[in-house]
Amino acid sequence: MDISMVMQAFQGILHPMMLLTIFIGVLVGIIAGCIPGFTFTMAIILAFPFTFGMDPVQGLALMIGIYIGGLSGGLISGILLGIPGTPSSVVTVFDGYPMTQQGQSARALGIGIASSVLGTFIGAIVLFLLGPIIAKFSLLFGPWEIFSLILFALTLVAGLSGASLVKGLLAGCLGLLIGTIGISPTGQVRFDFGISQLSSGFSPIPVLIGLFALSTLFGNIEEIKKSVAGKDTKILKQQVKIPYLQVIKDMYKERWNVLRSSLIGCFIGCLPAAGAESANFISYDQAKKFSKEKEMFGKGHPGGIVASESSNNAVAGGAFIPTITLGIPGDVAQAVMIGALILHGITPGPGLFHTQPVLVNSIYVAIIISGVAVLILQTLLLPILTRITFIPKEFLVPSILFLSTVGAFALNNQIFDIWIVFVFGIIGFLLMKMDVPLSPIILGLILGPTLEAEMTRAFQMDTSILLFFTRPISLTFLILALGSFVFTIIQVRKQNKETAEAIDIRKGA
Image 1 (cartoon, rainbow, N blue to C red):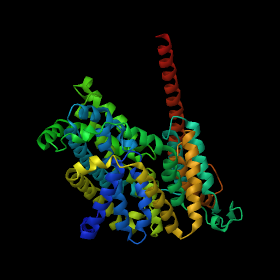
Image 2: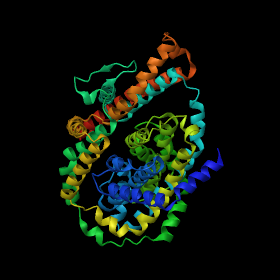
Image 3: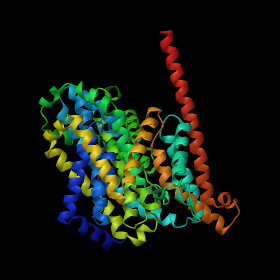
Image 4: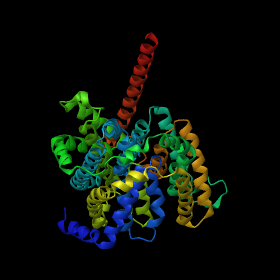
């Protein structure tokens, strides 16, 4: 590790304009996270067009700020309303909301904020230590290894994105199919249906905006409005002044919980599309097993909040590992960041550590500064943020719709991209109704062209298919792909069996 590059990154990030960018990003992320239904992923997608006029480091810093702020912001509505602001804050509700009902909302919020910040720091440290090692190892990859790695990532995404493996695989195949539209690796235009705008394929950003922003508006806004409207706003009258000494005592008592949960979050973050919500449940389960007060979990135990929020934010550091070392996004937010880098002519992957060392080190620093910004902004603005959770959805919906269309148009200044947003918004809405996961579609769209290009390269270098199975690293990834497929089938069958047994017990009662 070149210390001079790290210091140069610190110097760049600590510039007043860069700090302002990060703080604005964190504030936007916190607000997006604390409003039920308006996720930080949506905020990152909508913020993408604003990065066009920025240099790569500043644009990435803005999105990292939104990412870290959004991961933490979901705890506010989860603790105060019992409604998670983001899917990654579901577990926070288990103990956070009971503490609010006991009149300890300020303490719960303080524990959640502290855990988020510590999880962010630990995630950044893990990224700093492991990133260069994995990048150096990945330089050994040829087209056979890259093909097998992407295949493993896609099977992993399909398996982890929902209860139905078949739906996950179909979603991944749909993404791969969409990715074939445009120019093939051999230079031929295909599947453009005579539409000139499709000759170069779909741009991932309008597809992302449609699938994740518009489909959410179409599908969930009425349900979200009812759920928030039904909550008792008397919680706003509770004292929101954080009892700092009590929070420090709580955090010291749960110090091993913080470390364990953060490391779990880092590991889960490395797995494409596993998501912070998976890390939450696993960390919560482990915290409960190691606790001496197991019976208090779910009734307002600080350890439950610590496990959820520290693992939640540590996922960010873990998710960046495959993104910057292999060019494989850990989640949808990372996919948008890859799009931003490509827009600036930078290709994520192992070569990034050699061609853009300052950029890579700036990511580490931006994550740490974002953690500091979360601590400052959530602590100072907590009284205001508790009221933001009640923003009327009739104001939110047109704003998101406007930003979605403007953002899509700003990408290429084409009306066609706006049509793409609406078409994929409808497709996303219909798929959500059928419980089809959307993440595999995006991963398939982004990784599909690379998968095909590497397969073409492999056969151009040697026509033997046996090389995919005789090269050790390639074979390892293929075995892992098969293993993840089989493991998911076993897990789904186990869940179905448990569900059937539970139904039989209820009928017997």
